Length: 132
Image 1 (cartoon, one colour):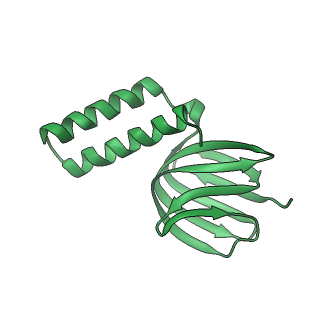
Image 2: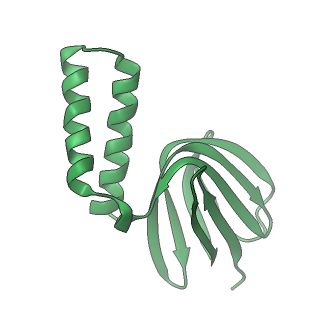
């Protein structure tokens, strides 16, 4: 089976750089599955999970905003932040979730910011607790 190269890069570091069989994520138009030789595409990404299939195994990566560029033999994700499951502190993510929920419930401060913080925390928790 042919492969394509996936790079996930943040302003701080290269998070992931491997040859993979398939990528599944949520782009601007909805969920997308990417196989080698996929048509070129550029799309913004929100808070999402990037599922990577490689050699019969699957791993999930938490991505928080950025852009996806697809070429026939390469996919590049330029992310604001990205974390592999082993890099996520589950207790810290759960605490962030509770803080965000409290701010939303109490109506304290910037509600859009609290909603985004909640989505990010849930995304991180899902990557650790339920690898997709």
